[in-house]
Image 1 (cartoon, rainbow, N blue to C red):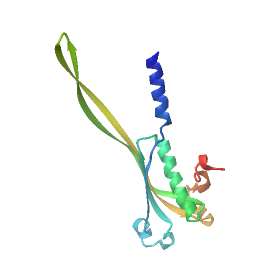
Image 2 (image 1 turned 180 degrees about the horizontal axis):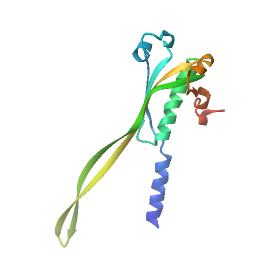
Image 3 (image 1 turned 30 degrees about the vertical axis):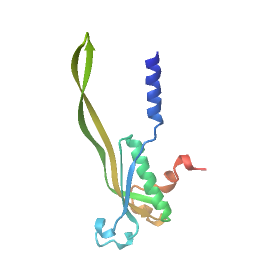
Image 4 (image 1 turned 120 degrees about the vertical axis):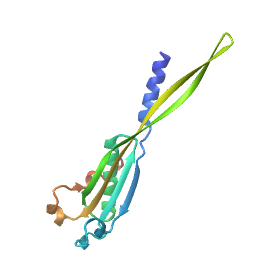
Length: 155
């Protein structure tokens, strides 16, 4: 019974720990992504990179939340995504430990090998801040109010 309680407590604790997402945001020059023909995107083109060992939906939402915050702070109500790359990278590591069992004064060494898999999910994309009059130019766009401020912070 004690083991069940400890296992339940450990699982509950793991769910209560907040997930951390590493977010990097960078303003791009329009000619880096769009070519020299599009000076109208100057100051409206950004790149964002988000990664975490947490849930992929959580990482995606954090990325969209940060892109929305950038649009909001720059005075835009919409943005569209270009050049998206997302996925999971797995790395495997192995650790060997040795257990010592003493019985009748005799030491027995028992090696144990443990394999751990680390999963890092990433979502990287470039995005353009857009106005009301530009909405028809884009097939897909995001509304800032859907992601920022975060739902937990809304009054």
